[in-house]
Amino acid sequence: MSTFQSTFQKTNDFNEITYGRRSVKLYDPEVKISREEMTEILAEASRAPSSINLQPWRFLVVDTAEGKEKLAPLARFNQNQVLTSSAVIGVFVDMNNIEYMEEIFGKAVELGYMPQEVKDMQLAKVMPYYKVMPESALRDVNLIDAGLVSMQLMLVARAHGYDTNPIGGYEKDQIAEAFGMDKERYQPVMLISMGKSAKEGHPSYRLPVDTITTWA
Image (cartoon, rainbow, N blue to C red; front, side, top):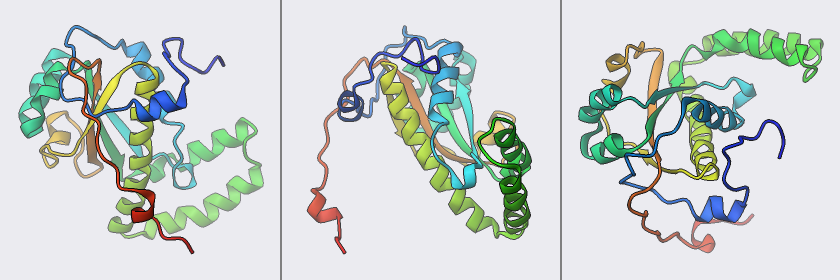
């Protein structure tokens, strides 16, 4: 096991992680995830790819009783997941993520991941493009990236021995402000509840590959 991998990790079995994942609606409220381990989970999830590595995802971790009480009324019919889980992670996109472009590319040069001339070229071409990109187009790009990190987050949680449930039914127009975030800058994507299941998730049917695939 590399030094980067979590010491809390329960399995590296790809089949167990992939096929064992279920959407869990009810968790054991006695199981807590430490902030140290949650930090590792988020760091591992953030290895997901993103457009030119701009990493537009931002996380709101709700893991206190007070935070859950604030979130529960906004979660509509998903309150069980909020109140019994170890934590709920709100996944947002940062619509001002261009502010981190210099830091990301500069650190890549410092670490030897990118030549200086490539950084200079990227900044010269990409920065002006992003500055004039319509908000709807930027949101589309950011949502794709946020979807990638969200799926990776759920698989990483499974590798750590936890269960998850992606939640789309909540008051998206209220959640940022409820937790003191700028709702114009930080736009919600989904909630992901995380913890140890008290009731196993149901298996579900998947359409066959022949139905969902076109070969060319």
